[in-house]
Amino acid sequence: MITSTALAKLVFWLALALPVYSYLLYPLVVIALGALMRSVRALRPVDSDRDGAGPWPPVAIVVSAYNEETHIAGLLNNLGSLDYPNSVTLYIGSDGSSDRTLTILQSFAGPRVRVLASERNRGKASMLNDLLAEVTEPIVTFTDANTQFERKALRRLIRRFDDPRVGAVCGELTLRSGDQGDNVDGIYWRIERLIKSGESALGALLGANGGIYAIRRECFIPIRADTIIDDFCIAMSVAAAGRSVVYESEARAVEEAPPKIRNEFDRRVRIGVGNYQAFFRHPEYLFRTGAMTGFSYLSHKVLRWFTPHLLLLALIANAVVLNQPLYRAFWGVQLATYAICLLLYAFSHTLNVPRLLRVPVFLVAMNLAFGVAFWRYLNGHYMGSWKRTSRA
Image 1 (cartoon, helix red, strand yellow):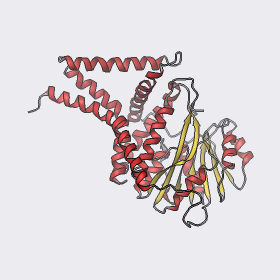
Image 2 (cartoon, helix red, strand yellow):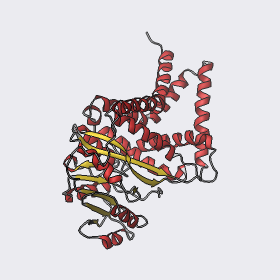
Image 3 (cartoon, helix red, strand yellow):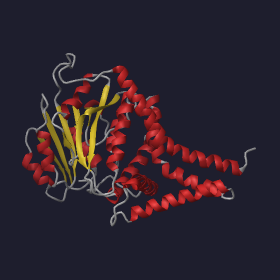
Image 4 (spheres, one colour):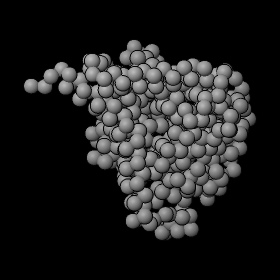
């Protein structure tokens, strides 16, 4: 019969091992396997060789904007300058903006720029549902007001739909930040891009990034009004319906990342609420997306979303065996690590976090945000409407 001490040790090691697996071992394996698969296939579609796929399809680009007067004109000019061989129609919604967003949009309105306005801020999901109801084009591309596409990004995104099995394509979003500041979200995102590329090669891409992705219009399923991570849910619904979701690294776009970790915290809390929302509302993402996708979803997403719970469980289990010197040492290391990282995070607005410590501080801050998000989700303290973040 297993003793309470032995059980506590088992729980402790398992609770620590699962985050290590999710953050370190799984990425290494999937990136390596993805690179191997790509080298074996040695396939890279190019614009000049579409294998007689016929004319390029007309495309809709959909954007839901709220108080984006700083970026909206630049977005429209950027999208209007894209190199694409067929018609591109922009469907832009102002979701109850209280600044000059709607005025600027109306100055661009025309046959190729359709403007939809809501008097109140209902939330991005509601606006996307309304915009998609207006779309007639067979391919729909999604982006954000603060995203800038490379000139040939749309062409490279859409060419992947030559494969009739493909229902969604995720482009490559780069988070650009200056040398100043302590936020390493850009570093974290570069690793995420490598993981996405590996998962795509293995047929297990998870969701999409909202800055640059496209789906077949026929694959769109209206999302609930309070949905927060709309890009993830839209793409995962495509996978759950049996269509492929692929990654196209040559379809590139850029966003600015905020310089400070603190600037990213509220955004991470909101994303965290959306993560738990998706997990509890959509079991089909785990059970109806195929074995490899379900495995990747569990390894890459679910375990990370519940890392705060696992780390807390490790502390509790560790406390049961504090009478043993080895576990007293582990207890001290855990508390010291969390305390140092939280102190550095708390004072990050007044000092520059040492470069060596930026990654652990970022990870601790992100998991703290997930912990706050879980509490808000349980209490229902969230809504679909949204506010501007400091991401430029």
